[in-house]
Length: 321
Image 1 (cartoon, one colour):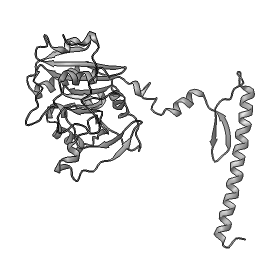
Image 2 (image 1 turned 45 degrees about the vertical axis):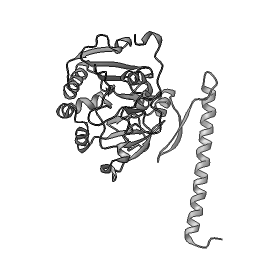
Image 3 (image 1 turned 30 degrees about the horizontal axis):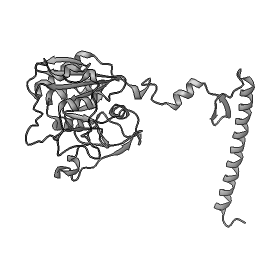
Image 4 (image 1 turned 30 degrees about the vertical axis):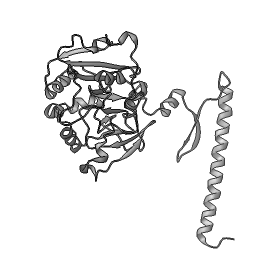
């Protein structure tokens, strides 16, 4: 017994939906049987149900088309998790391992340890170039199979401009990931995968980044200037991501993006905070992974939740003499 007109309508809609679903399933079964009979190896091809206002019909789906559908980013990259990654590191001959201002290094820190943490865990299709500011004769960097390019910088601004000049001279393809790295950052294993995830589709799908950092800046949680900071949060396959207003002068982007923003980097040079604030006002987005997969070697600002004192053993053929 129906107590209202709306209940009768709802019941009729459920009956209609039930018969429609049954009809679709019958068509699907018939298509599967016919496809099996026509398949040379006796197997089942994939069946795609195409429902339109004119008809409901079953049509075979080409396996290549199915692969494209299951990997919506395949039209851009052959394999996003092995995408070419160019690390361009600025390094100087200063062996004192000091920080500007009142910064303090962890007692176990050396720049060679920082380099090892990145280089010995870099994975496939990752290429490292060291822009060496000064004379590298007798330096430990020569014990590693890495491309060392001498530059004449002398200060942060000049060495950064030399980095930009080098990147521009390489004519990297637009989809190449470029990691501009300073020589006092430590990395944890798997960092190269997190880099590539940062430029893949995220959840929610509305979240995307033009620039990313592996450094989970501790100042974002402690400085008064960030007490009212709000971030958009998303996830990739392995980590959370948050939007941040700026990062240091160690950052990652696509070659295409850097070409478009080249003049901004050239103008602001080593002024990292101001540079990224300006890019943000121009609509660029910056993402920071949580937890961090890299850290600046500053004892007060290490990325949380990881023991950064872990050292990576150097193979005998690479050990410093």
